[in-house]
Image 1 (cartoon, helix red, strand yellow):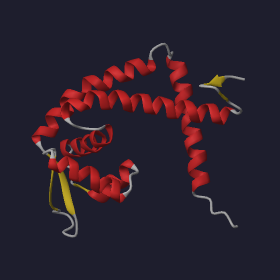
Image 2: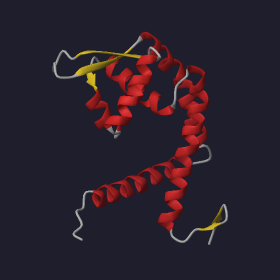
Image 3: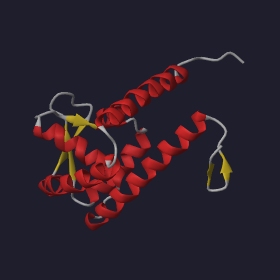
Image 4: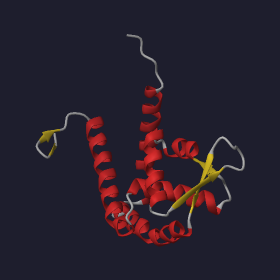
Length: 161
């Protein structure tokens, strides 16, 4: 059995959980390092990317859309949007499609950062996939998709106490 930082790994599920979490943290660390130049975090960048893509497609987005699409809580999105608005990356205006909501729009400043950050994303992806064949990549994706479906099914199960 393998040891990871002095901890004896017992099951495949533990190994997979630790590895996926470690990979995610390493990616986020690299993204945050790059985004610090713009005063942004990876989470803020994810919201800006979603809004930028919607903008280029002519789709109006509100806070609830962001919460649903990015699987984030209302307080998390509220905080991210407040910080992005204070930094001049987004603006909120009354929705044209539903006046109960405020739509969120990216500014030209956000569009510039989005265009520049494409290189960093490609750089991270190259490092992540380095040394893997297409067959290995496809197998990893397929396995992770099944695991995600399994966990989503478990999360939707109601247990009686």
